[in-house]
Image 1 (cartoon, rainbow, N blue to C red):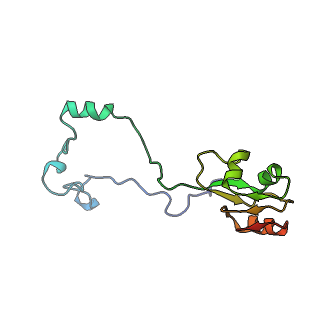
Image 2 (image 1 turned 45 degrees about the horizontal axis):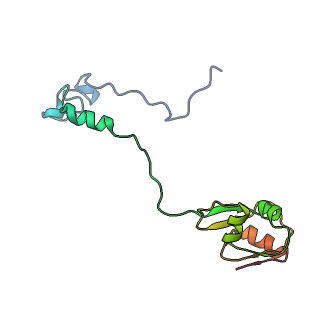
Image 3 (image 1 turned 90 degrees about the vertical axis):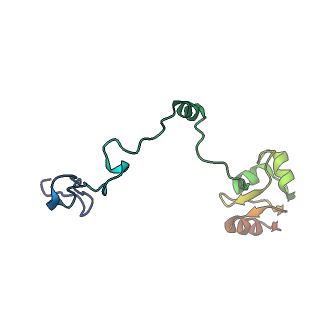
Length: 142
């Protein structure tokens, strides 16, 4: 236990500022020379109280919602459980079966699981593995 040391470079010593010129951070203590920002308590932020109250009143919405629509993912496993007979599957059929939301603009078949039904996919995106599995089962991907 007494020989354990942290990795080299993981522990850096804290800079001691304003401790004499020989330290390299003396005299101006890394603040440059003169000006409001060089002084203690310099660079004050919002002085107007009204502005601050207004800013505090705004909702704290963070991040953003992408304008680009992502395709909803449907697994092969769920496809196999829903569609038992060979048929043509498109976005309309997926919505009717409840595999994607009614608002979905596109869907993608993802290769997770097995499929034993010959389905014909029309207008749907597929992953490589899911396309191979569907074609192996006797289906078609358009």
